[in-house]
Structures are given as structure tokens and as C-alpha cells.
Image (cartoon, rainbow, N blue to C red):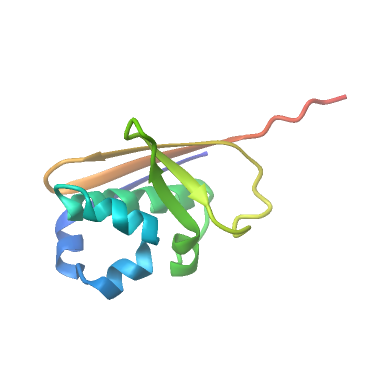
Length: 121
């Protein structure tokens, strides 16, 4: 399953305030965003990844679902998706792969979800 999303960075700049950010991002994400040289661009990319994940699952994009998804970054900078709680039951994830990219005006994310393969007997 594949999901793709593109976010206009200027839209994030217009909406940038604490209430808006706290609704969309976890504390861990906010700390990461604040450490970046271009925080608005980073926030737009993280949000695009959350939306791409939901699109890959064919799930409605709601504030509650967005809050259950966290984008973390490994030591090498690669993003990964962490799902909080059991908000996506009965999905049986084999792997979740995410890529985030930016230009000066847009942020884009692609998510690919693979299924767990069960051995037939």
C-alpha cells in the first residue's frame, strides 16, 4: 500500500502558532522541529508523512488519527513512523517505509506499507 502527500510550506507559515502545532505534532516531533534550521519546512514534511501514512491505509485524515502517528528520525537522519496506541487495529504491518523531501515551496512524503506474510500450512 502506498500513500503520497504534498504540503505547501507557505500554508504552514501562515498557520504557525503554538495551538496549531500542538494539535498536529507530538512533543518529540516539536522538539525535533525546533532544532532545525528551517522549522516550518520540517513541520510541513512531517505532516505530509502523517497524511501519506493515512492515505496508504485508505483512512480518513482526522485530528485524532494524526495524533496517533509520530515521525521520528534515526541517528542517520532517516525518518521512521511510530504508531501510538492501537488506533490502527486490525492492520497487520510487515513494514512501514517513509521518505520525506522538500523544496523551498513544498514538502512531499511517500509511505509504503507492506503486509506481514503468513506461512501457509
